[in-house]
Image (cartoon, rainbow, N blue to C red; front, side, top):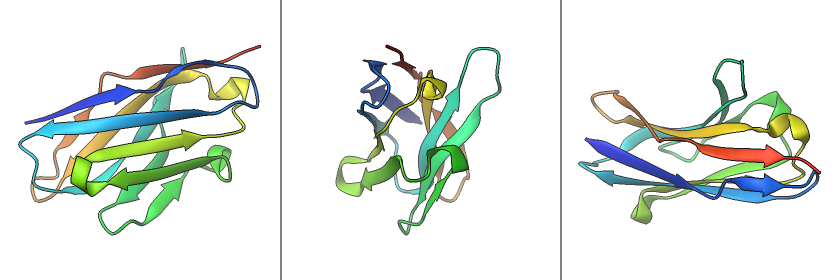
Length: 117
């Protein structure tokens, strides 16, 4: 079983930056992918960014050029650097992983990001 613990959320002014972290622990061998979803109030959960086992990345159109996903395999940690934040980025951000072999998805508890002046 995999446990994911997120950190780094908070309140930031428009144009500001935040760095989210998600540390995985437990029975980990390897992951097919790690990434982040966001969910704003009253809306569905949407994929923000993903990084594959080989380092390939995907970004939602709304965050391209502003957000950067990265990972530290030695620490089993995935990061989301969020720059030029906009009020519409306000949401709860959830980390997820897809385990290699089983394909099981695991989720973090979510961290709140609020962009407001």
